[in-house]
Amino acid sequence: VIHPSGKYAFVANYMGGIAMYPVSEDGSLQEASYVHYLEGSGPSPRQQSSHPHSITLDPDGRFAYVADLGTDKIMIFIINLENGILEPANTPFAQLAPGAGPRHLAFHPNGQLLYAINELNSSITSFRYDRADGHLQALQTVSTLPMDFNGDNTCADIHLTSDGRFLYGSNRGHNSIAIFFVDPGTGALEPMGHQSTGGEVPRSFAIDPFGGILYVANQNSDNIVYLKIGKDGKLEKIGELHIPTPVCLKFRPVVEAS
Image (cartoon, rainbow, N blue to C red; front, side, top):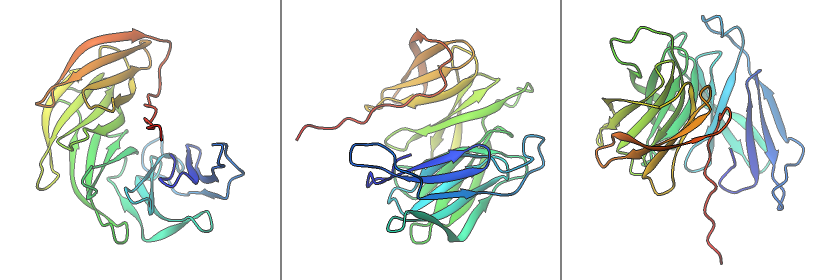
């Protein structure tokens, strides 16, 4: 992920490390200014050590949040742009349930809420975000699966609509997008159902910049499926593209000519 200033890139390494790289004016990366290895473990066989899965920056670019799948923690760091390093926040982490396995994070557009999708126990946890010190207060945890589903599943990606009214999370196993309404007052998630991804193992998805279509990358079925986002937040398949083993989708930011 790139800092809003464009001066640094932040990288999570699943084997335990996080790093910060200065970005040159031509967009190339310089030698890392900061490298740090996290420690810890969890109760799952997949949690024998730290596994930083992603880094997400707060809307102001002051804090970095590391989803550590291996320790069931969201590590919180202060971004020191002057020295090109990360410093532990006053409250250095937010703890999730044992065996949850946080994978990806998403800030609500209002800048007051953070949502974590938990890979190992198929859930989403919401947090109240304190802009002053970066502290996270856990509010709610909801399942991403139907009550009658008892097969194997791991969660993957998470995104909100630009107006903050709806949140989506992907299920690998159930092969669906879980749909939630976001209460405008509390940020609480209300389940609205599921939409088939039209393929297997939806590892990544992205919402187009205009907010009308959700694109799902189905890793094991070699296709990207287009889902139209209705005004009620529900999804409808409108097309697909066949492409080998898609694993990540990102839209290139639109830069207006000066």
